Length: 93
Image (cartoon, rainbow, N blue to C red):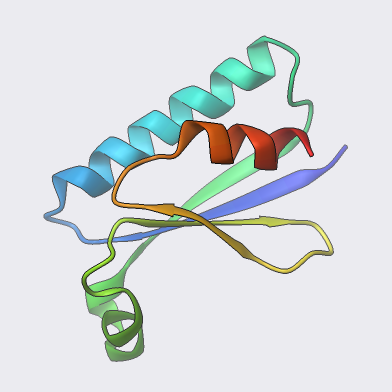
């Protein structure tokens, strides 16, 4: 069974960040319920304002969603809004 780590870079006062987190959680739950994704997943939220390097890299892009499968390099999946098709493709491939 594979594991996917999602990292959501955002800010504590960002409603788009909250929206993306909730949408991602619902999508992963639905994909598991529908049997399209059988692995485990974890969603880690990182406040970009906690690190100046993160601010420099992601400042105007938040929220940014990164996905990483076991043994593979991280992939930027989307920013601003959840790209459902991109995340579904990532989950099932």
